[in-house]
Length: 295
Image: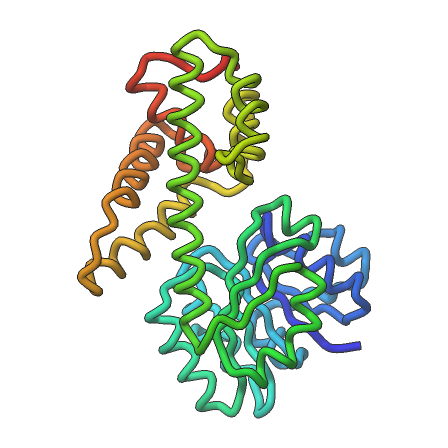
């Protein structure tokens, strides 16, 4: 049994932490909203601060919303850094800035600890099923130590490169997901406006070259009008901001990523920051004056 710390027990973090408990590990947990009773009932030990988590655990996992949250949890008052000692490992599974990740890693490494950035893809469904894709940046030694824990939470687990490379891979993932959601939205909106049954169109396309996980899962959401998150639009906006700011720094043009971000912005302007990201279709529907299906 390993002593594992877990900080951030939201839609994603809570089921991920549950899989670690199921794997036979002792869990020390902390979350701004409190540790869910479902986890404490299975043996998770609540901690008052990130420092207490880090003092108790050998491996500390973070799953929080954005770069400032990671910085505060790591280096703020009563933060993880205050509870670390030589030989411990910090694993940030949040989706944050690759540049700042490298800075965080350097500070943790100076304390004699390993640091892995290990953002995930697969959403709430993947978190609950333990089938997440995990993109890791760090040393081979650190990866090898933590891989058995990753295997409890995910299926497709890859050491992409050094610190920051996991986050870079996640940004690339989010570009692909956003543009696929936009493509499925346009296709189903076109089909529906032309008078075809969008559910039948989706069913037909699932058997051809246009088939994709986005068409399967989010296409169904668009047809059934089920836009409860899931993965919130505001979080995907954050990821695309990382992509676009990184692209500016690199001198790379990402025109379709910028378009997808504008569609998310339109959704947010209409009160949709907390909608599932598949609701990007609503921005296109508003411009067309037509919904893919009746809600």
